[in-house]
Length: 465
Image (tube, rainbow, N blue to C red; front, side, top):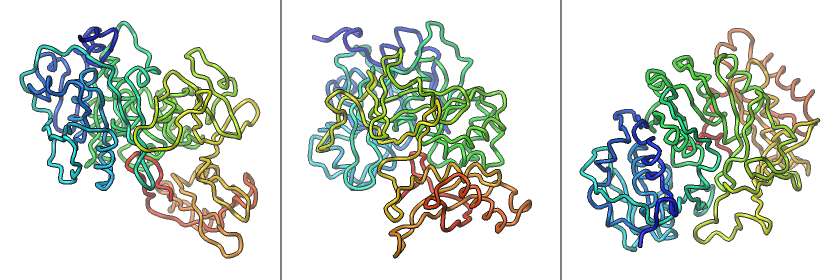
């Protein structure tokens, strides 16, 4: 016997019952889809009933295919595994096996499948077909997000729709005046939050495309009139390096995914003077912890404790820990790590430091450089370097030393036009002097190298080794 939509709410139920289905749109590089078309048609076609209670891996190349699949199958299938487009071929089958995948939905021919389970390739896409009339939710679907693993099998974090939308404020009266976009891919937590925010606001969402350059994306997003846009600080630093940065005129700018320093906030304020600039803290495991609206890096110490939303935060051994109704359920598969401690807190492994009445993020617990037994957080040094008006972005890393074990070195991208205003030798000395004034001696870079660009991961973060 099927449950009612109130017992097992699905994304389709929420959109249909609130009327949001008739205003939301998904805009890709090549196609626009009005979600109201899904009331009579389907991207999956007439096999929808065959997928009931299945474990489905969404492995589409195109974000639009993935987005439509999520709308259609939540509440129908028991499990949705969101496969990021950069998942290594050697990990694909491990993820499929760990999640007991029955069906793969894709818009491309997959040659990496060797898993011998009951897998069947279903061709999705944006070509809508005749749909079944019966879309009632039958279960509470697990949404499994695959994290970026640096070695071994990536972790698979299990959410449900209620934990994913817990931080999204929904108004009874929706409007299409907002047009959302994001640099993120929607199969990662940050992008998925924007996807759900747009849909549950009844707004159009302009999706990025993997093959697009930053310049092409900014041009297309500007032409679509985007008003709200999100990305990591690294996404935004790359955008600010582009002469196309003024192709968009957002009213709301959101940052998350990495430490947000004052330099990037000030740079965005200088370019988008009329925009509300917000940075948020979230993790795939803990969900959205909080938002900061005052234009300052870090967050007020008053947020520690229990918030009205039911989120509780504490600092233990310097690490920010979160207990929240938005927290994921568990890790799927063979991971031996506990997602939460015995009291329900998630250790984010983000180290914070109290300065006055405000906490500041200084780095990741597992990203420390050890200089002769003294700890250096690369992000702390980057924040100082990035404050220099001649710097657009930087990456601090370690280099082996026979004396201290490691040295701090920095790659620096100059601000556009800086080389004509000041020679590099003088710029390097100014950066080093800023570091000497703000940092302990062991944290000051032993070497600064000017580079044309800094590598980013597919998730939009600095590529740290």
